[in-house]
Image (cartoon, rainbow, N blue to C red; front, side):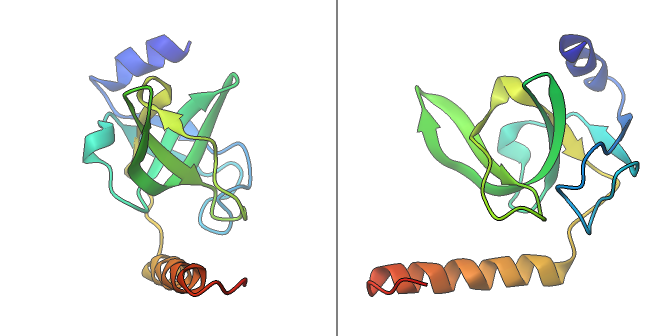
Length: 129
């Protein structure tokens, strides 16, 4: 099924239903999302994407893009907005597409960018938060 969806989405955006609350409060269980084909290179930080892992479609936001490469393959790091941890790296062959029906609010983006800067500064000065 995964391969058929990857092929179909190249021609037409698809509508999917959110199956978990990991993106709460921005996306809730049962919300309909519209997903279109995209490339890893076209993604930006905080874009919401869908990928396929362990026989599940997962909808999370992009936290880091091409931060590191594993075995010469491009990866992105994602996270659910409700979660306190990053996902394992997402590889290109797991990536389905970009969610075009929803975006994360500016306040969420600003908060996360500020927390990232504070964390890096604390790390630089040897401070544990």
